[in-house]
Image (cartoon, rainbow, N blue to C red; front, side, top):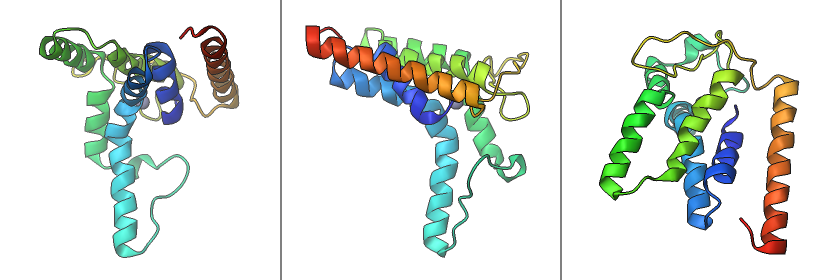
Length: 168
Ligand SMILES: [Zn+2]
């Protein structure tokens, strides 16, 4: 799924308590992609700024152009195993579960079915072996617009109920 949708799903499902919770849900929703592809994007932007050449590219990047560190980070941030460890760690540190963190496994769950095996299949059990799931790419119009429709619907209902009844 695209990164903005991940953030919006994270907020609307796990961050309805207050503004801070909303932001936290958004942050955990986008974190898996921000901490992998986001770093590549920022480094390419930085390179472009420094050299004065535009090399960010557009559309789907070529697999050969993607540095190995991005794949390693992608494995790390798209694993239910890593999430479980991080969630338990945060629970120990803050002495309570941080429910907004669940936007992270929800991101992995969405990616499982919206990435094909040809381009970054979701390594959901990394570092253990896993059977890749061949999903339908999120850029396919049916997936893209269905996702946008449900997100828009949820946000309209959310803001309507909040305005009318003060319900979150
Ligand atoms: Zn992702």
